[in-house]
Structures are given as structure tokens and as C-alpha cells.
Length: 294
Image 1 (cartoon, rainbow, N blue to C red):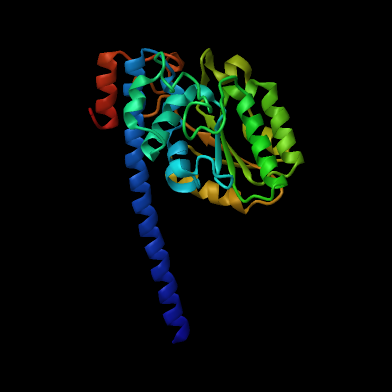
Image 2: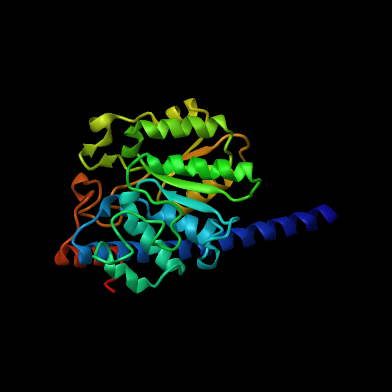
């Protein structure tokens, strides 16, 4: 009888967690929709920027900032906060929107993207933008900085975790692999690197420009724990992050299969939308497809 009651209690708790997870994922989906709307409106207003790689990374950033990371406006200088480095710095519109919606600065600031005098320039500036942990832009340097942050955490015996987001085209930079080798050498299990594997870069398909495949095997060869997931599936992202936290003595690379321009039909899987801003008509169509015209 005791076992039956205990099993019923366990099943009840599991069902409660499942319902909680479903609610959380629905909330994350709603936030992601808003972030995509922000990206489109920001770039339309600025007449320049990078929509494709910003849209492909939305679910990853939303999961980190609204589900996982120990960060807030009040903790910007807290030595125990988690850190995030946008190694693919050109996806700044996605990061800016997430930071604004998280409360790091006023949402109205998003309208000033890339304008003279704005804190929100084409690539993140840690000296100007609240919540940005590292200035990035030159590809390959962000993951190197993230390795340094994770190593500092180990030396200082801190419990914070460091997350980085790289593009698959960025993997063509040799500095990425120097950083990868260092992270494994120092056993940085507090470091998780996401790879936005959308298959395209500014000059076309990554496999044709300078093939970085097989990405998973390369990170494994460099001594990393490697996971491969759907980068637009919140449940898979959450589970991968949890799995990474269980790993000891080695960093984790989460290779995320994504769609460049995700959420906007005429931008999806089109390299031409890597660095082209939409016009007014395209903006209106994109907002309708995403699910709002605010």
C-alpha cells in the first residue's frame, strides 16, 4: 500500500512538472515572437543590419535570458552572475531586443539602432550597453573571451556559468579552434558554447565557402562534450543546457540546427538576407507572418 501511495505521489509530481514546463515553453514562445518583431522593426528603422542570423538565434537567446541565466539589470556588475558572449556579434539586434525586454534598458531605445549617438551600434559594446559582457564583432574573438571568463571563474572558485553563441560560418576562423583547444585543456565544464548552425553566411552556403563540417566531430576531437539539437525547439534547448551542467571536466558545445531568417518566409534559407534590412512593405509582411503588426 505504501509503495502504491508513493508511486501516485511521484506520478503527480511528474505531471505537475510537465504542466509547468508546457506553460513555461508557451511563455518563451510568446517572448520569441516579440523578439522577432523587434528585430524586423529595428532593422527597418535603421535601414541596415543583419536580420538572417538574428532571427535564427532567437530561441537560443530567449531560453538563456528568460529561463536559464542568473542575470538582471541589478546584477550587471555582480561577480557571481552568469556571463553571455555573442561571438557572432553581427546578430546584435537579437541580443539588444532580449536585453531590452529583460529590463536592462528602455525598449524605446531599440528604435535608435545604428543611429549616430545611440548606444546600440551594429555590434555590441560592453562599455555602452547595459547587460553586454563583451564587445564583439571580429569573428572568433568572442569565444576566446568566453574561455577567459570561464577560466577566471575556475581560478576564483566561482559558481557562475559562461555561455557563448557562435555562427557556423564563424567556425572558419582559426582562433575559434585555438579557443576550443584551450577550453578543453583547462577542463572548463562551466562553459557552454552554442553553434547557430543555419548553414549560410554572407557569401553563401558555408559548405561551399569554407566547409566547417563535420562540426560535432570536430568539437569532439578537441575534447568537448557535444550535443546536437533543433535550435528552434525550446524543450530541446532546455534539456541540452541541463545536460551540459551535469558534465564534469570538459566544456560543452551545443550544435543547433537552425533556419536563417526563421519566422519570415521570404528571408528563410536565403543568404541574401544575411546583411540586408527590409523596406516598409517587407516589414509589414514580415510582422504579419510573425504574428503581429505592433
